[in-house]
Image (cartoon, rainbow, N blue to C red; front, side, top):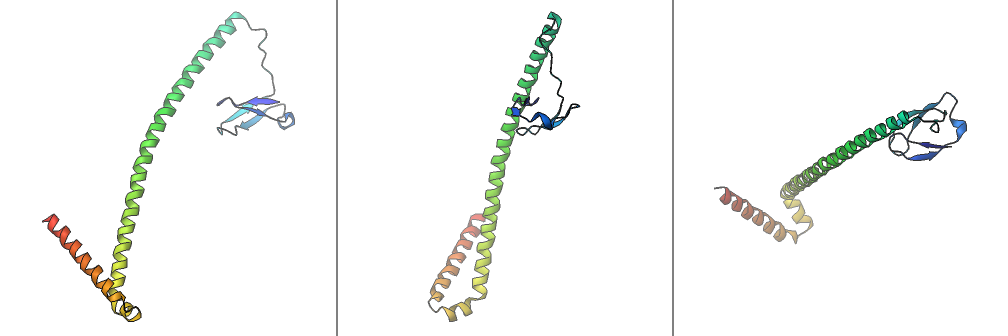
Length: 147
């Protein structure tokens, strides 16, 4: 038997033995919508003209509702893209802050263990001296920019 989701209209093949005569709740595998399904078949062959007009009006109302849902989805997509852009900027800034703090921690560690590093690696003395002098120059540059 084929069952159609009342929300997204996706059709699924279901074993009839899984649905009791009294009916049961079913969840759509695509949109996760839950509805009650009953085995009773809809009789549409003997519709009067009044019922046909009602069905047309119901169909038109359904289309209006679906169109409004589409508009809501489009606007929600726009807001999510704006959120994702701002969250990307936030992620970038957080990574930048972590990188700056890590660099400062590295400089502090190198300064703290400078003599031990020079004893272990004798050629590193010139590199550390140039690094600290460059950092002093950068500090003075920013200090002059602020003043």
